[in-house]
Length: 309
Image (tube, rainbow, N blue to C red; front, side, top):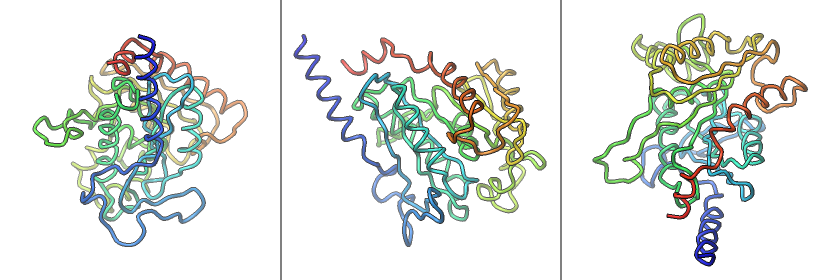
């Protein structure tokens, strides 16, 4: 029995090592992988534009591994990805707590990468993680999402516009659900409505003159339902980049549908703080997040079944 257990752990460790490399999101030949020029550019330090060939950057901790995982969606107004304090630093924070993560380099920059490209990428990422959960020693029922600013809008989109997958698909990945099991929205864009939305994010995602129907679809508090995952929201009341009203409306919709939710509104912090050092404020929102996250990522009997089956 001990030898069998050791062998299983060795196989899992080997698979984890393979999973640490950046991985393409879509299979070879998919339209998302086609484009001219470089697939990714960096117009300024730690600000990426993913023109085509989106990918995921895994970070799977070896020690104190809980089996839970989180898809990380950096913000940047759907124009760029703030890959440092809303990406790499978030992955490090999660790894210290035994939580695996996958930073999504989703297509952005507007133009051909307007909707549905970002949401397609986020849904595909959720399916890929779920499809490989057993191989990587992950729990397929404890896959969350965290998003910041426009990445928060994308996280709220995949939390409300997810699908169960296509049972008729030949590809196993496409047959799986894209629903997150829990959701964390940090100073998120939620509404596409004038006076509330972040106009730059709306323009990059929906174009200059979106239809009322399209704006309604991506005003995500209107898409909340009783299967929207449990949600943590954090926002600063002095945020002038993305108005706090965005988080408030989403939270109210969650309450109306009896979805477990917490909204933390802080007096100061502005917009875009991410994992930047903000003295006591940063410590407080991260403490609140960790308390909320703990029961959702704790090891369970389900994980044993996944790794030892």
